[in-house]
View 1 (cartoon, helix red, strand yellow):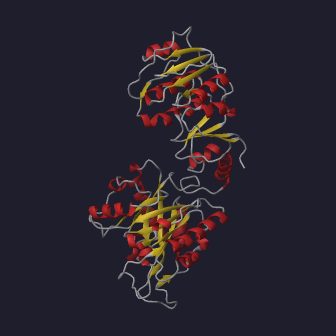
View 2 (cartoon, helix red, strand yellow; view 1 turned 90 degrees about the vertical axis):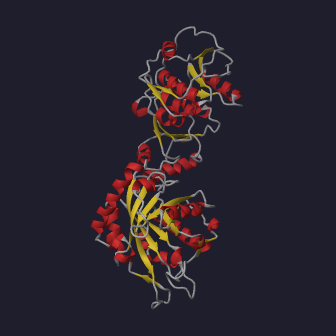
View 3 (cartoon, helix red, strand yellow; view 1 turned 180 degrees about the horizontal axis):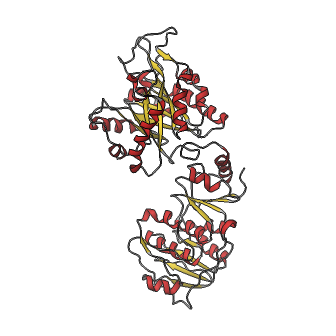
Length: 500
């Protein structure tokens, strides 16, 4: 387990927990109003002075007073309309003008950087202690209750330098004050896509060799949770694109079909290497429209619903999993992901899933369930739309999660296909609690753009927020087929897109 894993939540946004974790003492403390304009300016000044930053949040005056006292601050620089006054020490209000601010603080700002309010945290991470840019958000209103400064402020020495600095993890929910304090202290700060060191390759790299890892903001869990996740980040095999969590660190574009026949989709229209080249071309089309890396994928139909009962009477064709190994090997060797798709006929979904146990033990292989082809006695594939109940799906979920856990692999993708509400009964009872799995609902609707979007909207109603949305484009049945730009303009943006 990782040593030195610490968490400062700062749920109120004040930054008090972070200074308690990172800073022993400080001659100067920057205290900001909670509005975005003040926060941006205060963060810039704090990094420039190498001083801790705190935010005067409603109801937090007592904690703020105690923390400023603990730090032994001799001077407080207030930014924005702040009424907080410490028990001891000089109090100065930051002026509105850049030149006046530079004269007061002794900082020469590298530039003036206008920003939207929701980008202050990620930009603050990259500020340079001692010589930051002045981040500007909207119109700044200076306070004016404090007296004039007795003398200009001076930047402190950094608390850490180089290899001695701890690794600090932050994310979109981390208070600006906490981020500014970490950057100002000289810590090695990484802004992650989500509060988990397994989220992507950059997060894994950030914690790989760090002796001490501090996580700031909500969502990290307990310090024991953080330590366990750091250990997994360091030891569990990584997914294509890096990290051990599927989302939100990547999106997928997949070719769908079977090597048995081209009738079922584009995967049967060429050999494995040619299929890799085909899906890589799709990735190139999608990447400009995705802020996340786009990963190539195959969705391979492993069992196909049949028009007759067959020797075992289950109305589904099951092939030896070895038939699919060349496709799995080709896409995973190319840095992609494979999904085994099941069309169960009258077979039990779990019974079909276990056929592919050896393939599903691989870190780059997931599973898809297609209830359209889950038949009842007397039904025929294509004549009726099948249905699967949450209870049957949950049995697959727990089996697959246990398999993933026991095999020591990264999180595994489970796709549920659906284009009508009847295809999954009791959908609200699907168990999304297993952290070993990421579940996606694959909207299989085809036709005109209007029909596809109508299906998309219906399927989203009542869907658990823990289930991601996926999309399918049809070359023949859609009129017309969505372009990459059109597909990625769908809201919410699909995490998995397949082509049939």
